Length: 391
Image 1 (cartoon, rainbow, N blue to C red):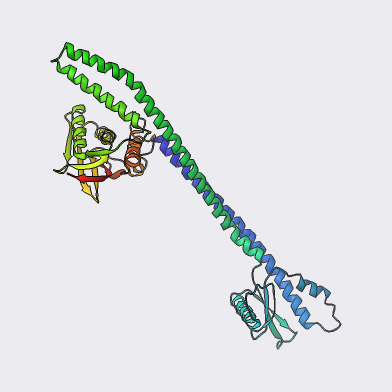
Image 2 (spheres, one colour):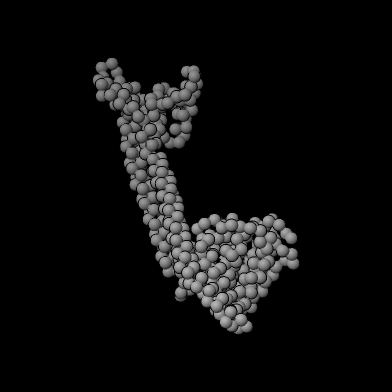
């Protein structure tokens, strides 16, 4: 659990770092945009003054500097309106119109929009109070608009890259975990095979020597149990064969096994329909899943309590619920219970539930999850599998 908590903390720190970087990038970009906007406003004030000088110039005035200022504006869109709102002239406006009338209507509309938005500089043509006024309306340059949108495009590209990278890492990690599990499972099955075969031979010899000894019969059951476990491990990593099996019989086997392996303080209850519910499953693997849930329930109850197995039909499929009266799972841990390595036990690898999830969801195309859990009251796991037929 500590390992899972550390991973969660690292993820939170990475997300916080990404948010800080994103906010810092937006703040810096906003500062640059404001500086550039102020610079463009200053240029437009100079341009407006040049327009005033041009309008008031007489025949002897030197207009070289004035014309140079006016002609050097090749980036900032500008529209000059008279006191009645009519367009006098305009520069750097992209117009998509078929006729001159449409062009003027477009420019006039744009000019009024800029004027109403406060994007204008009023200048007086003349030195008297009755002098005519014109308005120099201006918009942001293409460069300023690009600079305003660039950070968001950049963040979008970075976010897409991060998502793809995380997906690739998770896929690679999952594939690597699967290889480790498959190798470990098959190696375990291989190592168990030879001593189990030897034990089976010795059991047969003991049966011939002591045919009426019940202890020898019990030893035979234990060896067959080991053989079943080895068979289960050998099937991990390969697609197991699924055949029509009575789910009622599978649960009866689980209850019988748990009754023999647990103390009298643990009560097993099995609620199943009176008819057989037949599903396409691999009996040994599915039985192991339910056994694993029951063993975890016994640990959670600390050897005393009630485990209830409930099986019923729902939505065209079969449902198995395993409920206990144990200590429950904390809400923050529920989403981690199926992660490899997560465990609340002092001893344990944290692989049982992750393998159970793999068996149910990958091999049987079903679904397993924590239906409910409350600290101090118990936990209910739910398994959903497709139903074949009812007999």
